[in-house]
Image 1 (tube, rainbow, N blue to C red):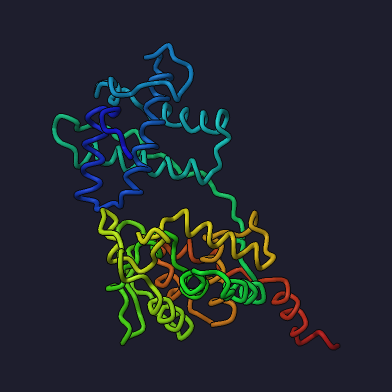
Image 2 (image 1 turned 30 degrees about the vertical axis):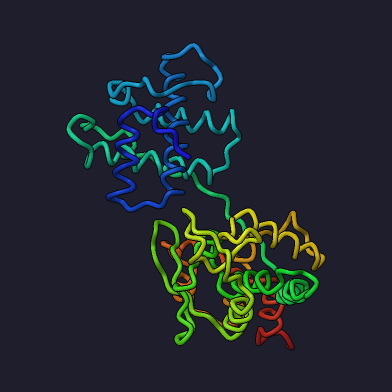
Amino acid sequence: MINREENPNFINAFLDYSTTILNKSPNSIKEYNYDLAMFFKFIKLHFHLTTETDLKEISIKDISFDTVKRIKLDDIHAFLGYLSTEYHSKPATRARKISTIRIFFHYLCQDASSYFLLDYNPALNLKTPKKDKRLPKYLSLDDSKKLLEAVSDEDNRNYERDFAIITLFLNCGMRLSELVGINIKDIDFSECKLNVIGKGNKERTIYLNKACMKALTDYLNVRPKEGVKHDKKHSEKALFLSERKERISNRTVQYVVSKELSKAGLDTNKYSVHKLRHTAATLMYQYGQVDIRALQELLGHESIATTEIYTHVNNDQIRSAVERNPLADL
């Protein structure tokens, strides 16, 4: 939860704008608040506006807008340097904070009320750090089959639910938040598809293959119908329910996946819910000959550059390419 009372007015105004005009998701608003709170705590320290040296103990609610007007590009660079030296932040972490700072100062220069309007954007020439390019970790086809076999254990009283969850992850590549947010009405059984709400509150369609349809049908046949809670999470509408008969939580899904990975003999330190999304994307690209643009749409990526991490080739493909060289037998 965001404690708005701990924020100066200009941050709360930006959060309201991001919610109502930019239509950002609650998770995005929470991230914006966290990033900006950390940034302005550093600014107080950097501008010698506090005697407190522990960033966590610095309050920002008393920061005036005149302080914001003093901020220059060098001060933002100093913040990024502080993250690197004091927190050992990775390029991806710094990149997210840079994105928040850019959006925030753009708002102050373009869309803020006259009371909070800036004449100069200090983040205008702010560059994003170069990220390390790492291949995504994913399960092989054989390991994916092992996982599905492990979760098919009828001794698990929730095996229909758990099997449906892992089947959707491995076949559709959806995000954790997307799966948890599915309502029964989102599924179109006649067209074999469902709608999910992805990042930035963007709705997209996910098509369901035979395995998904069977797993969902089997689960819905045993899904509790009586005693389901009517609460703020709209549990009565939810597809997946916990044993307490309320919408399943992110943590419960993570526990289910970790438990089944362990049963399948797979390393739970290496694989996770998000790695199942990587697995689905990689298997579709390697075995399904899926066009990268179609994969981008399926995964809900805003940029094709994000999808391109799945176009990597494995060692067997490299060896096969060498062996197919027309000069190989000469």
